[in-house]
Length: 281
Image (cartoon, rainbow, N blue to C red):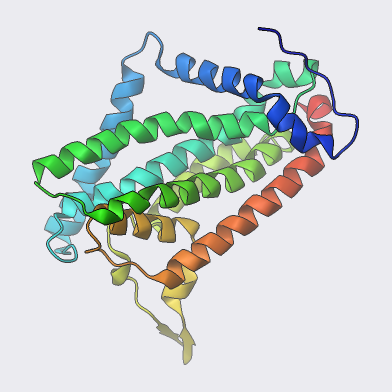
């Protein structure tokens, strides 16, 4: 198999190039997967241990110590694990994509190809960890004898939303990371901060509808939903847990809107900076 890498003749050909160089995309994605899992055990084990330990800790802290209860007849561990699924994928994909251009500096500086292939491939690669965590979720549901219903078939829609959220933020971070290398220190903070801002260990019903602050009525839950992972996590819980967990169309609508803005602005900024990547990197 031979790949001919050459720039398009005009700006409009860029998007056509993404399809023309699909084989390169597959090669880069497969390379990242094999590097992560070839001749290693901890890679696969870590994809299981991290969400499992998080689920155990959050279940003990929020259920046993804080005395919070899950909606309906949902075991609290499943409530946490259903949120861990999209969050771990989002966090991994965002972190991997933010460093993807730096990790492929030699390739970027030598040949032409649509640079957008690299962050997209990083998000796709993170999907492997998601599938492993999904298997853990299935094992927990069998353990608790909790069988999902027809809502499970809507799970792919929320997976696409999680993918788009990670992709939009990842485009901003990877482009900024090339221009300003300090962002590699900021990304872990963003991931940690976002983790505690997201409803992973508790239900969104615990967030009040309104806050009164110095006489002002603040729509707390509406503002909280500006975090795109709020709608994603609610959607995952709703589809996996037979609809017994809360699901607000307003939160989902806000998540979709914020995600579209992130993707559109991320693509715009990435394309704006792309022409300088080879020189700056």
